[in-house]
Image (cartoon, rainbow, N blue to C red):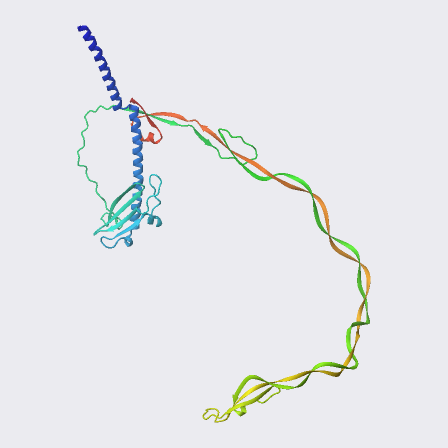
Length: 431
């Protein structure tokens, strides 16, 4: 019975012990990563730290540029005059005055031209210069004091701030330290690269593309052939011809009919109906005139003036108590009657009128005359034929074979090797 209990107890203990060992190993692996993992994380952290340091340096350099430009700009005539007065200059205004070049943040984006500024404030015995820079999500400022200090070489200069002495004691060094030196493996992997020559000139020769030959094409209209056709050509020639022309040989005097005219050859009695004036009649024109007796117009053959009233005014400054007459104006018009009247009228005859003139006598003769005539001939002419032509150009490339280089360094984070692209492999050996 004792043997059975002991065997049963041993199996259970062994199973529990094995379970505890496996759990311990798992916890150790989880809590303590491998050496290569630690090295990779360390190198990645170092790269980030280097970038942060680089970004901080760029930001600090930009602040320093703004500070130096502000000190150079704020001369005596530009300084604030009264205590508490401030004069501000934005980064945008500094750009306009060409005091500094354009500034960018770590991502290549321009810095804020309004939030970034320099501000000079007058104190009792010195000036305070604030330089504020805002680039992306990074913004900070510095304070600089300016004045006429005994160490200024020329006018106003920047106040020197003394460096405080360290107050903490240095740690004692061991008398005989035992230091082990190690070498750390770095590896540089250079991938295959491709370099290409310049593009060739355009050519009609066809080129086939391949992995190492790039090809570009272009198509354009141009002359591809000529066609011969017969076309008419018209020219102007001067020719001489025999022509017969009419010309004046002499002049002779002769009577020439120039026209006709009517001449009276006698008279005859003729009864005609016509209007005959038998008297006159006076027609009222509706016009009235006033004035003294001497102002009444005289009757004419066409008008008659008849007094219709008279008046002797009792007081008149201009008429001197003369009698004033009023008269009407009548127009005298003739009166006609239609009657038969017997009267003598002339009798006319139309005769021809001749005039003595010099007239030419014509004759004919043969003369030579030049004239221009069109002449058509036929010639062969080449006419260009157009078509689409493809041109080719190529760029030849070559593969530069990559390589792997191993270097060992006694520095765990060797900045010179890291800067050249080398990376820690995690392999370490004692020097």
